[in-house]
Length: 144
Image: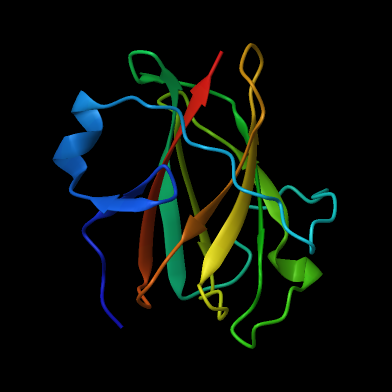
């Protein structure tokens, strides 16, 4: 397992962190999928082995969005969607968030997100990976 030093940007590309500062395109919508169920448990860490962290930003300008609700769900290491991996948390004053989970063993590996914040459109998207890692950095950009 390796630690990725790249950022998955807009759920589609893997870019060095320096690209983020020059581009503030809103994250595109991706389907919530067939395994969606309401996320009702507020919890920071749902498992262990993979750290997911990033920031919630607003276009234009990439300004931080504090107190955004970040709901997430995924399959477990056996490739099964399970309730223990469904939770939500809130971004901090700098738009940052972080939680611990396990590797989503699907093809392709992915984690679903719904982000809501007052004054912004609801964002439904996914992080998608290609190679197993213990660190996922995922910047999510909202639009008004």
